[in-house]
Image 1 (spheres, one colour):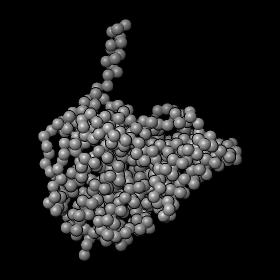
Image 2 (cartoon, rainbow, N blue to C red):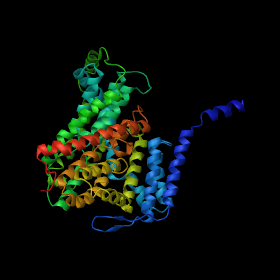
Image 3 (tube, helix red, strand yellow):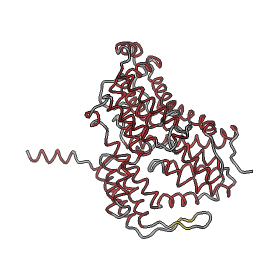
Image 4 (cartoon, rainbow, N blue to C red):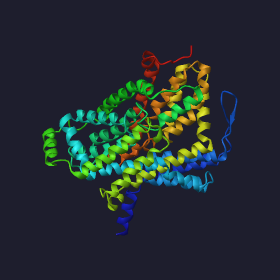
Length: 490
């Protein structure tokens, strides 16, 4: 009996998990306790010292990245480890390290997930899913395309986190009509990962898709002294965002070609199920009204001065409060919130602020960008885009832009590069972190479908990121010059 038990334990021992757990710990201790590293020096000759705390931040950053990619413990637990290490090794005080777990951005994600729950509970999700399927038909390739187009379009008018939380239950309903099997499928992987990727692609088109645009334009005005309007940003970003949406559709049709070309009888089944739901209920109308008004107020915030000081998190949390006030949700629903995802983003915010506040991120940016200060202008622009693309997978895209854009805009004039091309290329890649779940909330929301692992997300994110860089290169060299964007200073 004991022999059988020990044999079973040995066969279940996960060596891969232990190896990557130890790799993460080794990276942390080697970097944290290594001798001081050389200063970073910017083009003006200013020195940036990598302090003991900043080196510790890099150590936590490496451990967190390793554990997140290979999922050696639940992703939310890795986040807790990030906070714990900062405090135990005196990198940042507990007040800062753990407060970041409940920043406005994390609460915004919580409120977005609650909106998704309301769509599911009230039946709005099924009603929308049946309508969509009746339109796009039975071809799985068209179902992919329909879901991607709707996702991208919605991010033009609302935050991509809220869009992902809205689309997620809708996709779950569609997927349930594809198969009853609990095992992941190629179609499931493509549907949910594709939604996450496309939410990023669509969010670059307007200032309403994410906060990163407004922050970047603020830096640009401070450094360059010129305003970039809402409509100028949309003019240059629209062709890129939509080109990437259709490129991603092709990408997922190649890498995750659905097992079934069609779902026979789907259109008729969707019509019958939609009809069986009857007329829209008062609860559905109330829930939809609350959600629509919150989205409308958040969208109008950009244009109405009196609303501009109000943080969007407070606005979206009003919807959460009203769902409970009007008894659309109850305490049992609150207990169903995926706290693993909330903790994941708490940890992402904590390591992001840690790298930023200790100066580690700035040290990295200056070392990277000064390597290219004597390169051809095109190589320099692409190096900025590449750095921001990598950093935005680990830290907040706002922070990635905040540490990189000022340095890049200082170096750009020496190479005769116009500041506009630096700004817009940075904004493209900051919106599309395809490697890690922590890069953007839609990635983590899609992960909740259990259709893919963190390793698969990282693996397929590599070719998707390469396609993104190719598109940036085409935009810089061809598309934007044709549209009239200044590329080089004359």
